[in-house]
Length: 222
Image 1 (cartoon, rainbow, N blue to C red):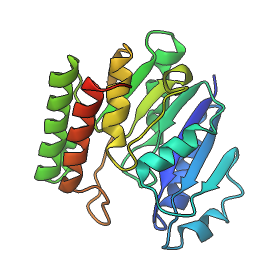
Image 2: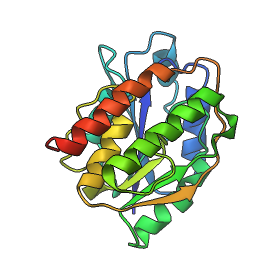
Image 3: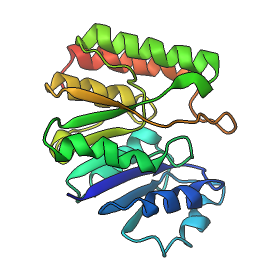
Image 4: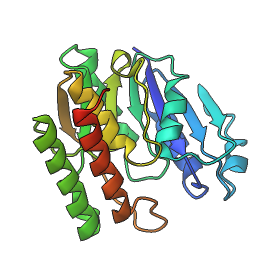
């Protein structure tokens, strides 16, 4: 089975070359569908030098749309059987791909989330993550440990035809809401995670849009 690595990118000049190499080094049949969300810090110039990365497809947004918009664009271009979302910083370890896709390859589930240990996060970020997960469990009747994880791994059929509306970080809530509403069980597996604190784009202010998305997709049409 081929893995489609969906990578939204915005102003990651310091890490983009390294994360692309780390993803490329994982011995799995894969493609990397990268969306440069109108970076302004030199990321685009660095991407032009990545021709040695096999099966890398770069799509550029002319205006900045946000993580959700970049994910939506990438999903329109995937060709793999399984999809995983990969941030362009170094918080997540692509060497975890194997254990995340194995339950899907083995047909035990269609959706796998990588569960983080939030000990390296600032206390208020960890608290916010835990609250959003609590709200997800309360609203959707599920029992998951980490709704906001980037490592959402899904069989292609799960996202095929799924129209994402959230354009920023609230896409994490929208994805989880729509996966749950459609009856897919989310299997969770512990992953390696090392939170970054410098140049962190996600802030506590992003919590409110996520809550609104959870409420919207719980009671509205999906």
